[in-house]
Image 1 (cartoon, each protein chain N blue to C red):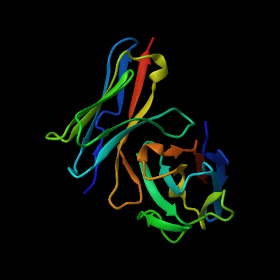
Image 2: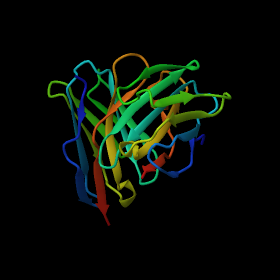
Image 3: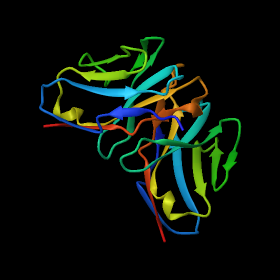
Length: 113
Length: 114
């Protein structure tokens, strides 16, 4: 069973503080994970990825941490900005080699000025 | 920056009618996808398309659905006889190669079946 779960539907943080978005998965064979960001009336936009052989990947204000033993990954945004307010999806590649993605339910982040 | 373009942005249709959702992928991309998101739910894979044929389809993609790349630029999703439960946001996506971070989504078509 291949599942990606985001158990927190929403998160609210103050501007300048850290935002931590969490994601759990069931399949230990996933090769990599991705985070997508989605604004209303737009499609998902790729944000950052991490290979399963790494435990951290950083890109500017965005860092993704992978804990394979716990089957858990998290996205850290530091410092959070009001423009970061969006829905964040974690995703993993589906089985087979067609490139399909399996998405979590998404977490709506609100960054308050 | 190259974009995946979807039209229309919103379509309202009567139950039982056929709809065609249109997408223009990025020109040098080789892999094409349709996903959908029912309001409040997760983004779900529908179908992948490569080398002018379906490479994979989900359980959702039943006989009522079909895809075409008729002219080398457009990529369409047809729903033959729409049902109320087909109401969703439909996203087209494309990527150039197997480097998955090159996955670009369009802005989506909101389909409302009444």
